[in-house]
Image (tube, rainbow, N blue to C red; front, side, top):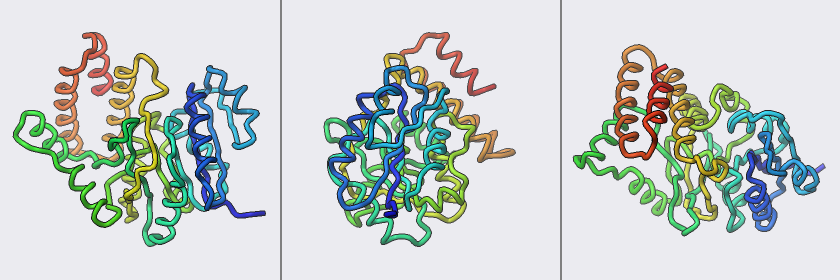
Length: 295
């Protein structure tokens, strides 16, 4: 039996067409590596089960409940046999053999390797959210100063400049939309924390990598279009903000304690208030989000 180079794990939730397009782009462009495609379905009701259960390109697992992003990935990865795991969002389209590019980079940088990702682009071929900073008081102070015009945030520009110059850059965390991880590392750090439903689970995963001395890289490749938010439907802003708020609170409880926790909570609450002022939510929705953070 041939050894699998990369197990691609895709979580589907009512995104039948997008997931099918993603799989098609994978099979079209991947030619240099042996891969398997595992689709975990979070109790979709859009006909995904009937459609994908007959798809011979993939291993398909239908869950009777919505497990969320991290838990669903854990299920798929437990069934995987690749040397590397490539967690790929269902709302992505590949434009080239990105599997080979990620695989080759990982093979050449195995020392203390935690994860690799690409420079994602949107449908207009412009840079999309691909990496970020861990949650810290300094980061929030900078955001607050940026919002009132006293500070110009150059973080992303500096990272992209390093990526252009060196071909890659170390980052705090990579977007969960295209997360390429050695299977052995995923097992060592015990995968995603199942307490997270959606948002901050990839940040938590990579924070644990950071504590373990493992590096995360973003590489100079723009071969994945990310159509962000495809599974949320019309209530996208409020639903996402609620999930982000829950994830942020859980992350804070997990990674901060004592005075540092009080400090970060107060700063995040202030930032949340400022964000909600700008968002077109009802008073009840805004109150629900604040209560979620404070409970």
